Length: 500
Image: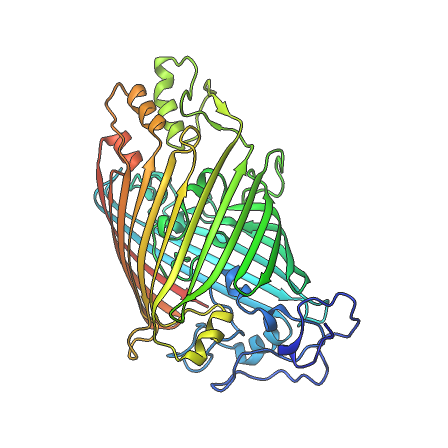
């Protein structure tokens, strides 16, 4: 585990090696078309050198200064602001990575749902990564910080207008469903490798970006808009968007990764530690990597247990007055109550979920596949991915779910950055919850299982400028069914995504 100034041979963990910051002989270079953006010489082991896929994983987006970066003229740039006259490359070589993303969405509910009409949503994300090895501090560490803001149509009545059980646009969950016109810190954590096979993450993490990842379909900035295709929808019953956490990650082999951690279910982007860990989420995953006919595949098995009380859907309320019934219906739909209601709770709950992703065809040359996967880049080709989940129906509005989607990226040599997606999902609604709505509304509301589809096309004007039209049809959106007896919705979205 002795570090080597040839960074590609460094080991992540070397806590006892004493050395100076970045080697004086390392001369920062200006970006050009021939730069490999690969490892840089360091004395201390660098995560960006040895596991470059981790930084795009933390960002949920590209990282300037890592493989895949292009800082040539405007047509080819992967980041609009380029190299900042060479400064950005120098900072990356010294371990400082700055990335800014902005995603605008024009949403139109053409028919059905809670309310027809249009809305505008703007999401902005600034992510900063500091590689402690490249910075000459200590080996094997990364500080990650993310600030996020959502602007545009501010009222939930003007944005959550489809009435589906989870957001039709994942951007509405960042930095939190009810946080608008605020710049909030959604992540600040330390990733530290303690041995070459064991690492820890300590701090506040974004659950909706890190957990339940597939090869494709993980980011509302470029892929599907509907949350059902970015994450398992059951996550929102257990977690807020951000969560304080302590996580251990063990990678005994290249094909197997396991992790487990304790998460705070009370964390929000606008608080540090309010009621922190008075209850807990205990989460574990096992990730298998494999190949089928030399085509890469991956699957996640995941489970979460919590002792944070959930509404007992078999008997959610005590005696209600007639004036309290509408509020009780709102509570079951996820709306905070204006007054205290006699709510019955269950003390514990759990969920188990899984996903798979498999390439069906890869256009990249075989020599480029390993490098791209190792640095968090997407392969040019066609893939299939899906998610599935189950949770007990007495504490979970969604008791079973499944989704499957086909995704294609870079199939045309003339349009190497374009992508296309087509997906369908099914959310099985808890039978006790269906009975609750029927009883509280005098049988006026009949809730059925929710299903939906989405088709989208990512038109890359340049690698840094994306225009993404998409269409969704949702059958039996739950909230719209209860509030308006509406059993369908047609949604058009036009997203523009900029990488700065």
